[in-house]
Image 1 (cartoon, rainbow, N blue to C red):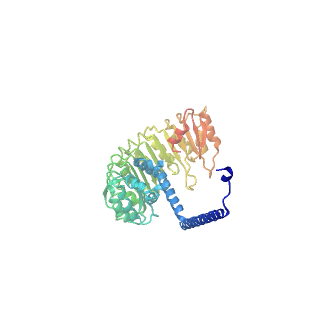
Image 2: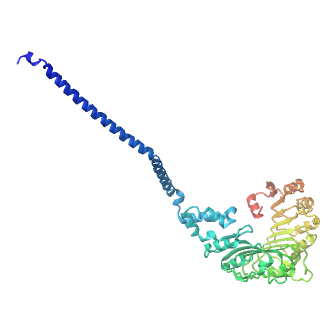
Length: 473
């Protein structure tokens, strides 16, 4: 074949046939592509419409995942990894705060309803429910006791109860009398008369306050305390001679502290009898008496309190001093308001040799009937207290003259040679001249410091914190 023959074009008829065939093939392909695109577009529209219809599904899934993450974080939080014993101790420490001890219902809401774990720990800690507080504001106090007393199980009970005319509370408490450890009871004559005798083998502290007068039918103010072998602290406050005369104090061989307060005429014989029962163990005695003793002239005996270390006599309680002997007395607190104070106090110091180291002189100038003690006799009392080391003055009578007599002078005998600390209470209502107190401290080489309402003078070497703790400033 020659080169010319190889490159010759196709005949016209054949070319046109081939061209028409190619056009038909391209048209069918385009039609197929167009149909495919339309089909894909419709499917995309269907998917988009379905996503629009289920728009909340992704958000719900995200919320569920976020919630699970929060649960996982709370489970791994340090608080939830605490052992139940440690968590229980944390709950028990809430009783150190006054706002949480007012009502167990508050404790119930703030702890036992937080989560299942906390509730199980709280209900499994009986000591948490052993602090029973019933105030007059308590709503439905009987239901309150029925709910929380069983939760304490066999733990000793610490009870603060104000019956407020609700006699049904005392029988409920009596059912658990064998578990009483501390009892603070405010009641009235009618409620206390309905109290049946109970045995309290665990009772260590008892405080009973009767708000009204006892009647003639009352069997005894503390007659319901039948068996108290561990009683150490006893506080009784009442009104009138009937309360003092019917003060049937419980028997206890370990009583250490006795606090008696009566706000009407009292029976001195009954009070002395009550004190004498604890003469072998009593270390702290406080008497706050108002009115006059109805039988003071008929009482002539003197009782001895060999273990007594601290004595506080307020108001007419000073009348007890001539009838008690305290050879081991360490701290004495006396009320200087009664007119008989100088002579009674001096007689008490001269009857026996006492080694009193702490003295607290009480005086309230706001009482219009207050009688200032004679300065000379008061200084004479100080000469009988050579071992005195610490003294506190609360608006002492004859303030300037008394402190002037205590200052060291070259031409005067030394009074209170072992005095190491003296505290003076500043009273804004009746200001005193500080120069006399400063002169007293300067003459005895004491340094002065102010702490709250007190001005304190101490000798070199005494720690001020120790002084404030000893005198409970």
